[in-house]
Amino acid sequence: MAKISVEIPDELLADLDEHVGDDKKFVNRSDAVRSSIRKNLDILDEIDKRHNRLVDDE
Image (cartoon, rainbow, N blue to C red; front, side, top):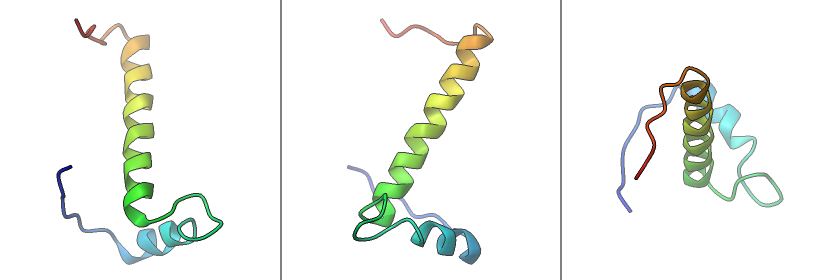
């Protein structure tokens, strides 16, 4: 798995941290970021599908 580095504003990171930890939605920050990216890409695919811009994988 590749590792990347990103800069995130403190207020966004603080908001993210409210959802990370024991008994919360995400086990760690990496899990939260991966999940967010997947959801965003799914949303973009749906938009592309509605506009007939989605290319079929073959």
